[in-house]
Image (cartoon, rainbow, N blue to C red; front, side, top):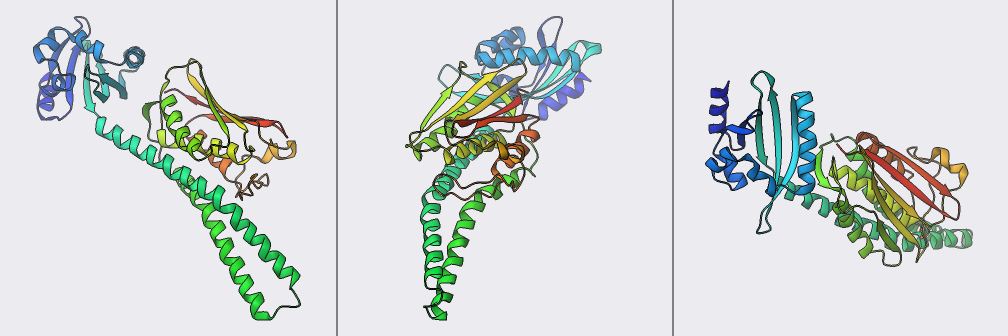
Amino acid sequence: MFEDIRLLGSLSKDGVFVYDIPTEKFVYLNDVLPRIFEIKKQELVQQPSLVFPLIRSEDAYYLRHRYTQLLLDKCLTNNEFRLQFADGRMLHLSLDAYLIAEHSVIVGFVKDQTLEKEHEDYIINYGAKKDTLLDMMTHNLSGPLQLTQNILRWMQQTYKHDAPADIHAQLQLIKNNTQECLDIINDFLQEEHIESERIFVKKTRFDLLERIYNTLEKIIALNKDRKFRIITDLENLNITTDSVKFFQIVHNLVSNSIKFTPENGEIDIMVEETDKTFIVRVRDNGIGIPARLHESLFERHTPAQRYGLNKEESKGMGLSIVKSLTHLLEGKVSFESEENKGSVFSIELPKD
């Protein structure tokens, strides 16, 4: 078996090792693993503990927990952690580990995922910029377009019998084109998030607080007439879930609060953790939700849909998407709201 692993290790572009549990030493390393950790091969064989100072402290705790789980389950894959070097460089690694109980050894495969992580961060940041821009379009264009609709409606009613038929035809054409513009603005972001429900869940490990800060930064830049706060006792919170879907959930909830919170209103994002889960709450002091609408709030095309304070049209799907994405991530969503006093939406998701 070990000869096969050595052969595999000589061919692999990933780090491959065999770790002997009783002696707490590597009995085999391929040449890639020392290059990843930037430690000489012989030193790493003799002192596996040399890798520990390189591992981020919060990730070291995570790996200890996963090691205990490995002894029970015999197999664990996609264990993500980071190395921090003295010059500031950081590597994102993924570890697959298998316990060969009869030999008291662990066979492991370490993959450098740094480039994949950078690409993932780019996608998230690009999505944040794009979604914020679309929200800006919704807020800044929906109002004038809605005003145009109202003026056209007034003209059609006022000159219903006095204007020639061709004038009425032209007014109707302008009205239809204006409605198409409104539909494009209101549908584009929703359609993309609906599509996300059909795409499989790809779990990765990331800092939840960092993701929220990045998301909020883009939103604040275009909503300076409201006050935003992140409230938490945590310095960081590394979790394993689908980062893209998590971003969409948070973005939808914050955008919903913006829509129903007046100028100079307050929107808070609160983060806390339990032993096995984390909770994100989005709280505002906006107009709240009437009790009669509570029961149907998360339904698709819900009858609870309302115009925003700036006359933003709603298709009644935003919160339905939040619920669907949260369930895909094996979590749950809830809310509390009182009319004219604001709302609190909460999502609770597993850490792993």
